[in-house]
Image (tube, rainbow, N blue to C red; front, side):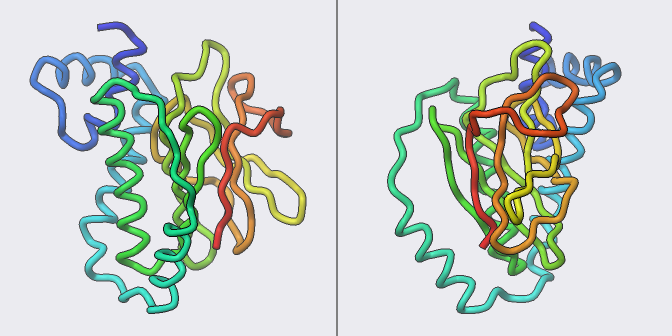
Length: 203
């Protein structure tokens, strides 16, 4: 199994969806890969939140109405086919983020970009946010994807990732702010490099 293939198993490992051979290979890789350890911790945090979501307050009727309306207005997207496992794990990450948001009354932003790239943004009261990303090919060597929070026309760096995952954003996301993703030179940039690959807005 190649190093890139091992990187792609982070979400599956966190969701306990690997067979014995894959788990053994990934755990050996995990000991020396800081980025995979961070990615596993991020996905496990989302799953843990989902597990306890029933204990949170019920979302308001207004929130449910906004989410349903936004989903109806969202145009259908044609998403390029990707290997089954990668599509499955990315879908689980998107569904988990959206389910957590619905269960505990978070605001949700759903959007996409070119080439089937998808973003699901969940924002808690106070602006703490997570971004589930899907449809992003593995970042080329020496590059990372970087998330930006754009409020008042000013972009600030909010986290980096290398492929489909759930990112815990490092910056608060105020209502109406845009969260955008660009491709940058590793380890990260302080100003975004165009083009914007995908973006969504906190509602």
